[in-house]
Amino acid sequence: MPEQAAEPRARIAYVLGQFPSVSETFILREIRALQKLGFNITILSMQPGAELIHNSARPLLQHTRYRPRSLSWASVAALFRAVLYKPFGYLSALGMALSHAIREPGAIRELISAFAAACYFVVTVRPGQMRHIHAHFATYPSTVGLLLAEMLGVGFSMSCHARDIFTDEARVMRAKLAGAEFISVCTNYGADRLQRQHAMLNSGKLKVIRHGIDFTEFVPGSHRDYRVPLILSVGRLIEKKGFPILLRAAAIIASEGIDFELAIIGEGPQREELEQLINGLALTTKVHLPGEQSEDEMMAVYRMADLFALTPIVAEDGDRDGLPNVIIEAMAADIPVVATNVGAIGELVLHEETGLLAQPGNAQQIAQYIEHALVDRDLRSRLVANARYSVERHYDITRNAGQLGSIFAELLKLRQWPPIPGEGSRMTTR
Image (cartoon, rainbow, N blue to C red; front, side, top):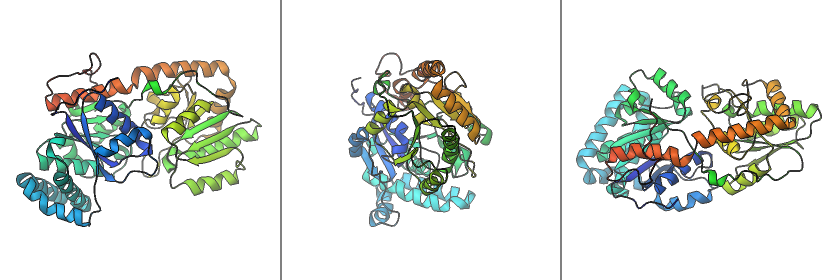
């Protein structure tokens, strides 16, 4: 699709925790799709990008501005310069930060840091590039986004996902929900949770806009045989992903003499624990932890995988997955999926229709479903066909980014929308 020429008013600042981030490719895809629709996106990142960078993220680095360290000269100088750039907005945002600090003392440190970050972006990014502020995650990025929008006198919105909904990490949440022109959520499960937690939330502000992928990247029928049946799992090596449960399921399968290998792609604080468990379960020849992989490397692995397994749990702090994008990717790559019924996974993985859905923590049931999917060709064919149809219908990035673009276009009063006939004007609301 040819990229549209950006209208001057179609300039949005995206506030992100980190960019680029290998584990947040859904944000990367969203930004790229919005650019194709004619939006000019400036990325404001709170942390430097990861060492591993997807090739598709590289062109966006020139549009990314990074917040300096809190006590650096650049950050301190911006506190004084911002009052000259936007005196009334500066005082208004400072008053907002102080009032929220009084109401929520536990948020004082975050508010001070976020105010300093907002000042830095005000003095280093042209205001015309920030006609609307959109933050991903209701945590620190949204605190920065709220204060930055107040300082600039522009609109603010945010996208909520998983940890920011299911734990108590999001500060000054009432203010964010009240101040946002809209809040997007990628699953019905997350939207329902937000509405239960925050009775004051205006349901008209809440938009369910699903993530998406570019299906031209996933070509059906391109599978390449691996030396044994290859089970693939992808995710950060953290508690909520439930990888110890998956390893125990793998040990059950191995004990029954079934030949396979399991690749768990990702990185995180649980690596050492998982390596010890692999040793203890005598799975060193069966299970591999290759670390993070680039987009191109992941596509090569998808083509070799015979089964995708992801077995999340609810973590001790309440954190859990919404709907991991890797499940959508696996289905688009024609790989049958076995997963656990946590968060919003059941919105896409329908048992024995688009995948096999086990109870979280039940290693025996997970092992049974994996074995079943590996040996039953008819089941595999049915799951793959149904899953492909479902993701193409509901998780196309062009269509779903068009829904988001429609909201931005209305807020920014763009003269011509949609720029692409058909999809851009559709909007999902709750």
